[in-house]
Image (tube, rainbow, N blue to C red):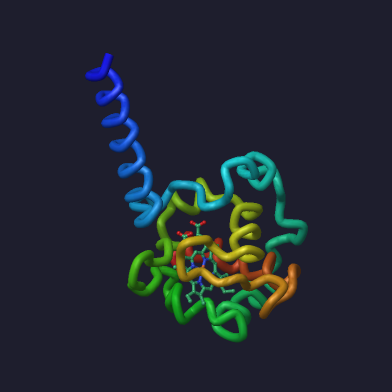
Length: 144
Ligand code: HEC
């Protein structure tokens, strides 16, 4: 009886340590970064604006300008190395395929808890500017 209990505790501690290490470093860049209970809803959320050249250009201005995105995500979208948790590589095709506009919007509105990603929408840019910058982020997958 005692041995079984110790065994269970061991497994529990193992899971706990494993989860906290994964949580601290997010080694998997494909792992969703939004609260799990909102994932489905956010994946269904579409960008309300078309990816027109004007909107992509407006998004580019935000990225290099008042959004300050370039300071962490770098000119080419690959991101700069940051202590603790570096940004995703926006040029990574699989990441582009998996990550939806709705998930990105949640991150822009809330930041990415536990990382250096700050709140942007509602603080330094508007909702519409947020959707435009998401259109711009999509262009990194085309080698721009
Ligand atoms: C101070 C540094 C910093 C700034 C400024 C910043 N970011 Fe980030 N961003 C990060 C980091 C670090 C991550 C990685 C967090 C994570 O894994 O979710 C991140 C994550 C993201 C993600 C989510 C990636 C994913 O996998 O879902 C998006 C989208 C994003 N940033 C867009 C932007 C945009 C757009 C701007 C400008 C309006 C911006 N960021 C400004 C540091 C920054």
